[in-house]
Image 1 (tube, one colour):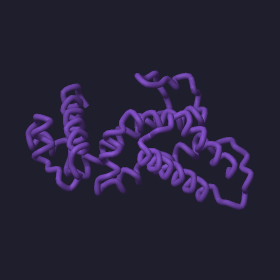
Image 2 (tube, rainbow, N blue to C red):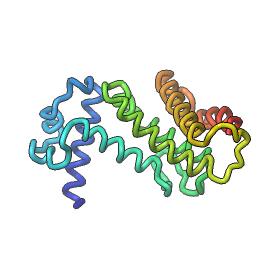
Image 3 (cartoon, helix red, strand yellow):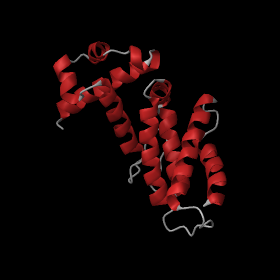
Image 4 (cartoon, rainbow, N blue to C red):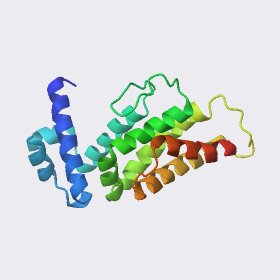
Length: 187
């Protein structure tokens, strides 16, 4: 994707995010998005077929960065030297959710929040399999790994929803510590 296309895409994402923070997903129109992004209708449709596709791409871009194997130093946190440490990876994810609170709350509270949660859980399943369970001698061999991964990912999603509902009062470090203290004993 060339630089001009990337700028257009970012403008559309920003416009959509701004609208999500003030309106219900179903009430947002393509026309409002293109007006706010200052792009033409054909330009919008050359990037996204539907509003759901826009939401899916926005989630994918966010998650590809948040769940990246290579963590870089960022404005609010630096886990570039974490080397796949589970606590650092979880804390990194929580920082991103907190830093993108406006977008995350807008998406979770809209009718397509299920789509966001499905993508989120899919990325979490991968992360858990690669980093939390990889090389760990599990205490409980009765529970199949697939079930355990699903359980841990569901627990993480529930924790994030609880955190958002409670105005994200805990720091990402504190929440990661809570999560690992209840998760590691079941593995």
